[in-house]
Image (cartoon, rainbow over all chains, first blue to last red; front, side, top):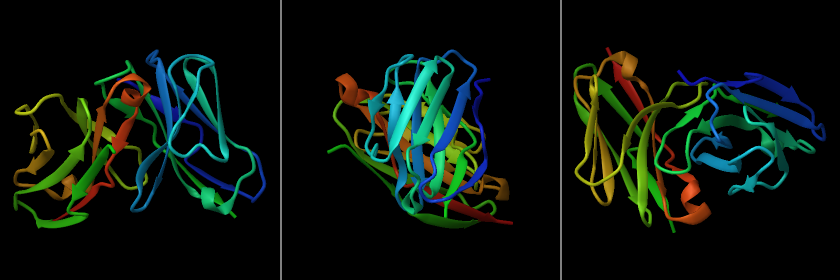
Length: 113
Length: 113
């Protein structure tokens, strides 16, 4: 079975801190994604990567950056955390470009105070 | 504009009371329609992929169907353990636009014993 592992289930950070969210997948998938999920808004794509060192902005990239130095690892960085970045963050990986399902991690609940 | 709308927002059923969840979508060049189950505080878990109108897939008490404009997730004789949020997502288009998946806001299902 595909396994996508996020480094933390819960995080509490202070406003202005730099925050790193880590995600590792074990199925050699080319494509990896970061979403945030908020009540009533569904999942919104922050960034995605289709290869090592490649990244593309999603729908809401402002205030975030990403890093993919190895195929199995995709990191989301909050450069200077703000309270409006309090959310559930979900990492996902997928085997090919189109028509295949994504596999999600367990999520990281981030609270910025 | 590509869009996914799920209804109802919430559905309360008695154990054994069959019903359907709706996912209406607008997308150019459907590449795939996906159903996921999400339990509270966890990441979405993949259920089904449908590719073309008329296609149906089943898993235990769940059956997913697809037309050109919508998909239904039929739940037959639900049990309390079927309580969860069910997410619908579509992938379509071409180029990098076909790379992204659009999620609906989900239907929260409650099944009472």
